[in-house]
Image 1: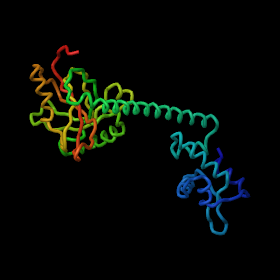
Image 2: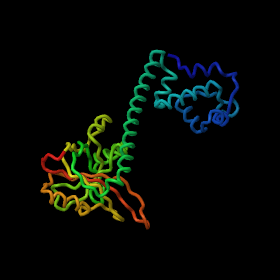
Image 3: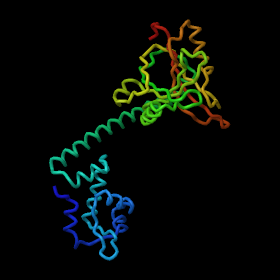
Image 4: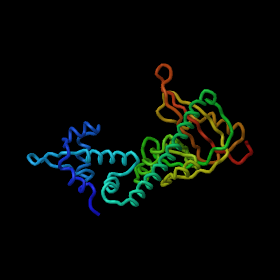
Length: 284
């Protein structure tokens, strides 16, 4: 198949010609961007016979506009150049179908992230009524990964990759802390957590992650003042509640960071909620 852009260039030698700066101004694009598209074959400008400067025509400008259209719908530079140059009508239509499918998936992802925003806002707005309250309930099923233990990030390759993946999903993913039931020293673990149905809907990469099923828990909403690190001792009201009501801790303690704000007299207030799993008992 003959290269369409090169073929058009052969027909535009007598068209009005623009410098790269003029074309950039007319299309509200930067000159370096146009030169880059030129280098990738998205346009093929004429060359001034005297000084070899690039000269562009309206045809080049319209190819650049088409490049912007394709960029708007998520096409890569390589795919955009291919669609403008080297495909027939059937392939052109198939290319747009693929872009449509990718855009639909992106919109669905954004809708799920919007749900994460709404859930976060609802959680923040509930602080006034739930702060310092201890309740019984079911902790939802979660996927969770550890990315920090005490004052050190996990640096293994798998952890670095998983950290990058998880942060892309915030606020649908929560910044999550954990105190292991098997650790008598109560080292603080930070990571990310997401409710399991949402993780499935988002096709979350579960590499380096652990599944926590739904379990009955004691839940507490609390805050700390001017503390850089959360400490196991901050959970004492909930631990005392377990003892008072003859509940036994039945697994890792999971919680999440809700908000970090400034309080009166420049105090730093950090709000959390925490779930302490308890042995089977009808609590609902």
